Every structure is written in structure tokens, then in C-alpha cells.
Image (cartoon, rainbow, N blue to C red; front, side, top):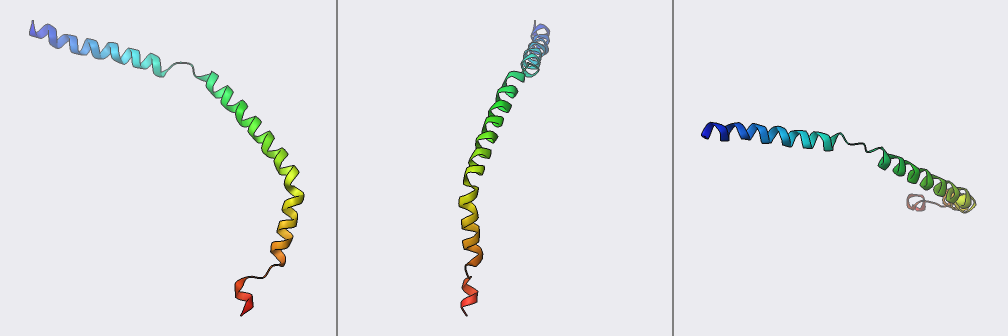
Length: 74
């Protein structure tokens, strides 16, 4: 009877490994597709925001270029 108990341990391990293997090999492409679509929407919004803010940023860059640093005061 003890030998039967020791044989059940590898049997349960094999069943557990089979369940884990089927879970690990499941098809997860749906999640990737929705994530890539969300990333594409994010990039479109960021491009629109970048194009809308270019005029504001160019003024800031010119103002910073004309400003003096603290080391110039000495």
C-alpha cells in the first residue's frame, strides 16, 4: 500500500504539469492586438498634441537660448 502512495505522487505531479502546460501555452493574441491598438491611438494623440504645441515650444526655446546662465553674471 505504501508503494501505491509513492506512485500517486508522480501521477499527481504529471497531471499538475499537464494542466500548467496547457495554461501556459494558451492563445494570448487577443490581448496583444488590443494593446497594440491602444498604443497606436496613444501615438496618434501624442502626434496631434505635438503638432499643436510646436508654436508654443519654439517661443520657449528662443527665450531660453537668449537667457544668460548664472555663470555669465560674474
